[in-house]
Length: 251
Length: 78
Image (cartoon, rainbow over all chains, first blue to last red; front, side):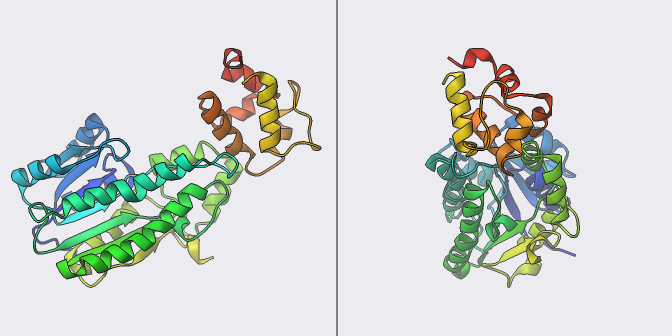
């Protein structure tokens, strides 16, 4: 049984997919859950479907266009106390062969996967915002951060950067009892995957499915691992990338 | 970009020169069979250059490159 002592967790990309499943799991286990996303109505709808919506709130924020989240975080602390965790689950898909890839494609991918959420973490870790007792940060990487795939140069390089990012941040934050880990899922059945599959053929989709010995994942499969990494039971786990891919990367 | 430039760009991107002549009557299935990345390449190219969203399943509706141009909209090819 996972336990969460006085926890309040901010989750990006919480309107759907892995982010929403994580929010649902944590909220069900009594964690104060703050859903972060671009679209207010989608966030409100997602929050209304949680088991305990009265123990949840939303923050509207776009990593690609908004600059600061300080005011929203301070208001949240005033409303329901300090944060003890962050899950960065917001993501976009990109499939372009090298001939069409531009430097802006890398910029967009890296901004969403690393630099913009890093600024959120900096604001989150301010002593007036984050719990002095420490906490846990979980980043969504990808099995593609360790493998290659045609058409995914910007995506794979950015997800590979996540693995290095969590190692160094974990070392810097260990003294504050804040753990930092990433999870590296294979293909999970989410709206983002639907978008990816719409650009490829039925034959390729079957080939991708065949690469997962245990089949494609469900968002809740990944949420369960994220939940563990946020829980009191993972207090000795930090700086590590955790594969959860139905056996994809071991072949 | 006019229609001829569009066809030339497709030919360059997919390295069709010597393999396939690109014009109105070029068969889409021949273009897509040239490279395993052809679907993604065409979808990305059309999105970036002509702001038109294609899906892989759309290609089954086209017989020739001319059909693709008509679906995107002749007016987009100045």
